Image (cartoon, rainbow, N blue to C red; front, side, top):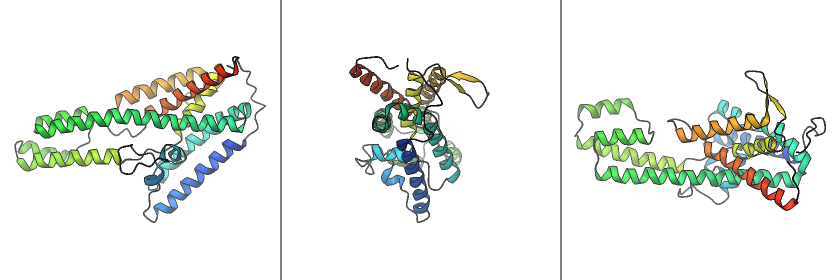
Length: 278
């Protein structure tokens, strides 16, 4: 077990400091370009590999992007929580490992989160597209209702009222096919941004190395050991990812992917070191 002494780490070591600076600069750049109608997330955010917007560099660059240039409050909350967690836990790891090792760890967790996220999207989108092909072969109101329920597709209630009034109308059926095709196109072209996968890896590593360090929760304000905080976080992310609720735009499996790659990298480093450091 590694001894953790809170008084030792300096307040802001170089890699953590520069990661925070880069993320803040990217958010400011997003806002500036957003005023000109340019969404930087279209170029640097992580797109599904089958999307025409996907570029090879996005599994790396999406780690330094946050939020939406047209949603100031949401973006500031997104980057604020991530950078606060990075400062709280990342500085401890960097001071223990050194800048080079911490940077490798952070990037591996972030890219690993992207890989896991892509794997889950491939499963979900393939399932959606195959179901869409089946619907095209046998379209109808009942089949449409089953489809949108099974795949959590948001639908305008007014259009459903119209279809219920004329359930066999050819025009309604054609519109439903067009709607689902447009929805699929929107899904595969949507970007994923944020350092959360890498930050969850940092949080996991902290709890893995210092499991009995007590963290003070905000609400309720009680001390809880790091290992239990991370365990609860992981279970919440797993449940939320499986639940896949309509309107949930959080990449839960990317968070879990960051934790998974953190665990794998820690085990690899441990085996190569020839001694236990946790």
